[in-house]
Every structure is written in structure tokens, then in C-alpha cells.
Length: 603
Image (tube, rainbow, N blue to C red):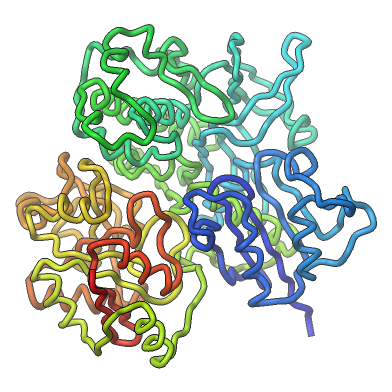
């Protein structure tokens, strides 16, 4: 009998995560923040502990990051282990090693960050072969020798030619320098120094911000942390074209090159808008403060710069998609890296690429959490090349399954001051149509940042003031839009998917069909779009049943869906997290459809 192969891969940085494989199948994949309750948390120690729920030994520990373990991970006192190898050893998952700097069970893939993004997207796309475009903030730290000076560069955009079982050939890379340093197009760049011995590829080495760094700079300018780019995406349609704002990118036929007078990169972390050089952008700057959610975002310079940022960055990414197709000859393109979560841009590509016969797959776990999956799958495919597992069928419900007995639920809710009653889907619909917010908790949590009906907050989308009402309850900014979940068989009557059959992972902000906006005003953004999730009974039986019950009652096949958390918090993971969130908010109801139980919290 063949021995099981257990592989645990972990992403170390922000959005840290762990992915566990058994014989190539994903057992679980989860972000650390869901367990630690700290947004974007790094160092997935709590997630590593969860491996013991499934196995007491692993064959390989695969590490993903942007710098090697030896350089950045820190050391365990006396033994000299890096902290991740040390924790795995102390847990008994791997054996004690003799050499603290080399262990045959530990595979460090931290030097190929963008390639791991590409692997996650490629294996989960269902494509036999494809080109991968990675648009990211700052990936692998790459040592360079420029004019005799040893400096560090960071990968910002990369293009790969992807083939089974584990071939990811680099064909293009933009490497950003903290600078200042003159940029140069290098037609034959030696990949030996960081990943690919004997291979060369086209590279653009500049002192300019990459596309995602431009977005990060504008996000900081608007008063938020650079990693909160989704807020800038929500703000952009409140802005307009403004001649007072200089172009964010220089005109060039080569590749995207940011305007360094305006956007100054501070690799590896963030970038800044050089507002002092431009009087219009510098005005009212004294009203800004980090994390400020006040009326500062009403200022036209913030709104109009957000508009410029969204429209100009998505145009630059479109150029790179076409460049990827031209360089590899592949018309199937997978997209990942942090910018892949830009659902406005993802819909924009469809408008232009459909007529060109270019098919895209955008990875829903495009943030760094996805590199744990990419590392696990790429390594497994390298040691088991004949494996034919279809990862495109895995979906996103990859968290842990919590089994609660009726007695457990009763005891737990009583201890938290909750009332519990039996309930049906119709009871929940009755609550929704009477303007109640209902939290929805079931099954395995979603991997990635989207709530897809297992950790969701629900509302009736037909109320005209629903967006403002739920934003106030969740403590979110006025301009943040909400998503909708729709029965797949009705999606084309309500929305224009630009040739897509479905959108199950909520990765596109799509236009409504004529006459639809007034029917569901709570979830239509100011630009007439909605981030949509199509749902089938096969994908999510309980959630589909509830939406169908809502449709049978109201004639509306779509339900208002937002993530089950409050502003600034991670999505809930456990029933304890769920009840605690209700206790901290004005949300009264929590529905457990697997048990047909309704919890009511007195607020």
C-alpha cells in the first residue's frame, strides 16, 4: 500500500496562511487572521497548530515569502532552527535535524514569490496551459549589480509561460528599485541570480513604482493603510476626470512606467504621492490623517485622484495582458497578485479582450494567502508529475468544518445571553423583508477575502437606504459598496456578464441590465455596477435554498451579501467569533441553516 504524502505549505508575510495537502488533495487552506483575529496577520503559527487536527507527521514543509528563511525568519534559541522549522519540529510534525541551516523536509520557495502566485492561479484555472500575469506590490527581493553597485530590486509585474506538470518559465519581469536610479529595458536578463539557472528573459529595471504600488500610494494619500486598496476602488466612481491631476504613468511603448515626479516608491512597503509638487493635490493636506474615515474623502482631489488611479492602472494592466499573449502565444491568461482582487478592472478587461479571443481566469485568492496554495501544489506536482487532480473544482470553501451538536449550540448560546429557536428558510426571509439584518453561518469558511454564503451578513437588497444602513452597522465608509448573491439561472436577466457563463467567486463588478437598478438599489454602486456571486445548489445547497425562498416570496432572485465581520475585523471563523460579532454590533439575528436554528442576541 502506497504511503500517504502530507505536504504543509505556509505563506509567512501579510495575509499569512497555511495549506495542507494529503496526496495532492487540499485538506484545508486558511489565513492566520481568521484564527488570531488580527487583520492581515503575519506568521501563521495558529494555523500551523491546526495541522495536528489532521496528521501528527508531515513529509514536507514548504515555505513561501519574499525573502529566504535564513535571512529573515529569526532563530530558535540554542537549536538554531528558523522559527517555522523549529515550531514544526516542536510539534512533532518533522524530525529533529542535525544541521540547523539545512533540513531535507523543509523546502524554501521564498525566492519565487510571483511564481507561487502564478502556480495558484494556473492549477486552479482548469486551463491545460496558459500565460500568467502577476501584478503585485513587491514580490521577491532580487539582488542586482548595476554599474558595479550591489542593490536590491523587487518584482512588481511578471509574465510566465505555464505548462503541466510544474513548468513556469519567466518571460518578462518588471523589477522596481527604491532608487533613484535610471531605468533600462534589458532584453536579455540573467535569471540565474534568483531562480532560473541558464535562462534569460526580458526585464524592465526601473526606479519607478509598479502598477500596484501606484494604487498603494493613492490609497495612503486618501488616508488609509496602503494594504486597504479596496477602499480606493470603492471611492473611484465618486470622482471624475480632472485636468489638475497629472498623469500617473509616463507615455511609453515599452511597458507601464509610473510618473516618478508624482508617485515615489518606498520599496518594499508602499509608495507615496508627492503632493507637495502639485498645488492641487497638496491643498487640504492638513486635514488628512491615517485611518481617518471622516469627511476628508469628500474632497475632490481625493476622489478625483482615486478615479485617475483606477482608470489608468487598469489600462496599464490591459496592456500587460496583451503583452503576455504576444510573448507566449497563449490566449488563455491567468491573473493573480494583489491587483487581481480589483473586481472593477477585471470586468474592464472583458470589455476589450472578448473580441480578441482572449480568455481570462482571475484567481480569487490573489492576495499573498494564495501563495501557500501555489507553493503546495507546485511542489507536489514536481514530485508527483503524473497526478491528474483537477483543482479547478475545489472552490473556496477550504476552511475547517465545525460540527456542533444541538446541545453544544444550546449551551454555547445560553452562556452568551442568546435566545435560540427552531427556524426555517421562510422565517429568515420574513426577517429580511421586514428590514432585519441576518448573519449566516455554516460549513467550512471561505478562503480568500470574499464572503460566499458561509460567513455572510444578509439583507434585503430592495430597500433604497440599505447600503447606508448596513454600512453604519458594520462601521464602514459611506462609499463602500455591497455585493449580491444570485441564483445562477437568473443572472443574465439581471446583469451583463460580458460573455461569462457565471461568476461564482465574486471577482467582477458587473453592469446591471436596463431597469434593474431601481429594483435592488441597496447593492448597486454609484456607477451602476454590482459585485455579483452566482450560486447553484451544487455549489452551496443551504445558501441556494435560502435565495430561492427569497425569490419565491419576493420575485427577486438576488440577496444582499456582505462579509460577516465589522469594519477592520477579519471575517468570523468560529461560532464564538460569530456571536461575539453580534454582541459588538446592532445585528440581532444569526441563522445556522445546517441545524435550522436561529440565534437572537439582545443588543
